Image (tube, rainbow, N blue to C red; front, side, top):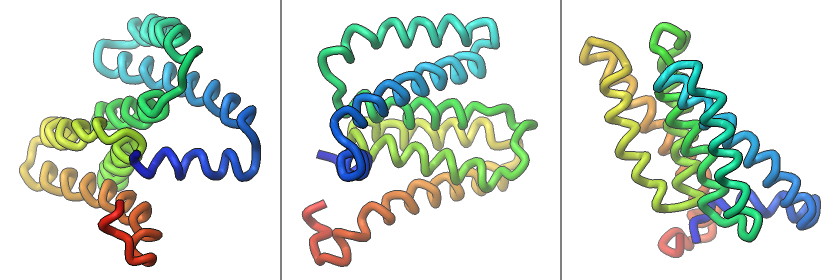
Amino acid sequence: KPPGAFFLFAPLLAFGSMHTVWVTAILWGTATSLSVGLLAGRLWGRRYALPAVALHAGGTLLPTQADINYVFWATLPYVLAAAMAFKPREDVRRPWLHWMLVGAVAAVAVLVKQPMGGLIFVLPLDVWVRAGPRLSQKLHATAWGTLGAASIFLLVALPWLFAGELPAL
C-alpha cells in the first residue's frame, strides 16, 4: 500500500483510537465535499458550487458508510490540488509558492492512493495553460509545481532511505 495512508493513520491511532479515525473521517469527508464545491465554482461559476457540495456529500454517504478506503482519503488532496490549480491567475499573489503548494498537495494524493498519479500528469497541463501567457511563466510554474511534489515525495522517502530500505518503498 502507498505510504501516505500510514503517515495519516499512525498519529491518529497513536494519540487516539478508532473513534478518532472516524471523527477525522467525518471532518475529512466534509472538507472533501467543500473542495468539490470550490472546484465546481472555479470551473463553472459560483451558482454550481453549492449543488456540487450537496451532490458530493449525498453521493458519498452510502458508499462510505460501509468502508472508508484509500480512495476516500486520497480524494480530498486530489480535488484540493485541482481547485488550487484552477485559482484565477489574477488572484495568485506569489505564483512560485502557489504552484509549489499545488504540486505538494497533488503528491499527497498520490502517496495515499497510487492511481491518483494521473493527477501528476494532468496538473502540469493545467499549469501550462493557466500559468500565464509567457513561456517563462509556464516553465517557472511547472518547475515550482514539480519541486513541490518532489519535496513531499522526498520527505516520505527519508525514513526508508535512512534505514537503507529505499527499494522496499
